[in-house]
Image (cartoon, rainbow, N blue to C red; front, side):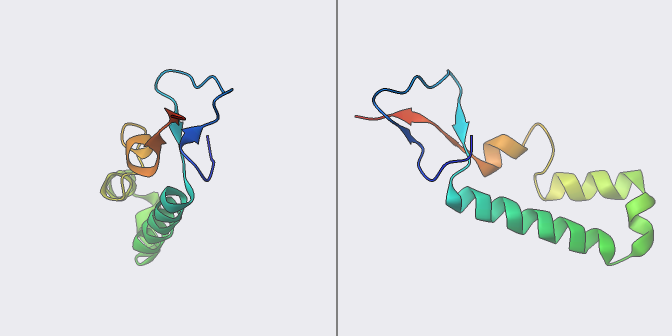
Length: 79
C-alpha cells in the first residue's frame, strides 16, 4: 500500500505482513529507479545485455526479493 503513514487506523484491519510505501520510502524508490536508468543509459548497449540489467536491478535493490523490504515498512496498528 502507498500511504503517508505506516500506522493503521483503529478501525482498519491490516493484513498479516502488510507493508506500506511511505513518502520517505517512495522518494528512495524513485531515486533508485532514476539511478538504475542512468546507469544503464550510460552505455546504450547495456539495455540489451541481460546480465547488465540484472546486475543493476540487484545493485539498486529493485528485484522482487528485495524491493518491498527495501522500499516499504511494516504496517502497524494504532496504539
